[in-house]
Image 1 (cartoon, rainbow, N blue to C red):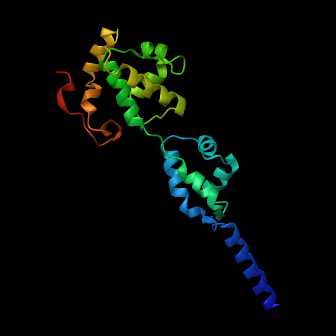
Image 2 (image 1 turned 180 degrees about the vertical axis):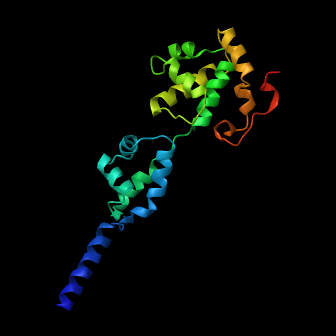
Image 3 (image 1 turned 180 degrees about the horizontal axis):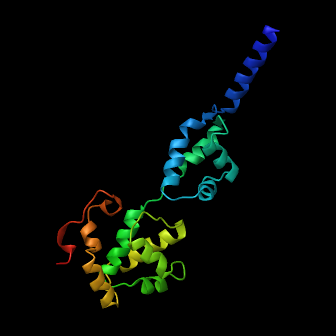
Length: 191
């Protein structure tokens, strides 16, 4: 019996080598990464779609219902990156557009129906709310398109200055706008 078990074990190892199959990956190696991606605002469904795995795989990995996953599945899950923006960064971007005179209504109209004024007001107020990917991408697109264009609403511009909001130029230091601990610099704060 021992010889038979040894033979099967050796045969298994030879087959795995022949297929160059990598050993399964422990789930505990994946959960910190997936929790970071979830913390950035991506949903479980978005993670599954981006990784090309089923929603159930993501759910089982996060719930700890599996001990290991195939190496290819682990690679695909590790390839999913967190959102490149933060709730703080999105709030500061909306505030900076308000500083230029872009009201929530005007921004919502320019977003093609993706955003509504209430979403933008909620974002500008802060509080850590992170909208879904499509809405966050719309805020990023609006920021790229309008960062040098004065807005039509003088009232919004005055209100932003009263609240101490600053222009995008104050966040000129790379990813400072997305870091909660960073502070604006330079000339952009209104007196």
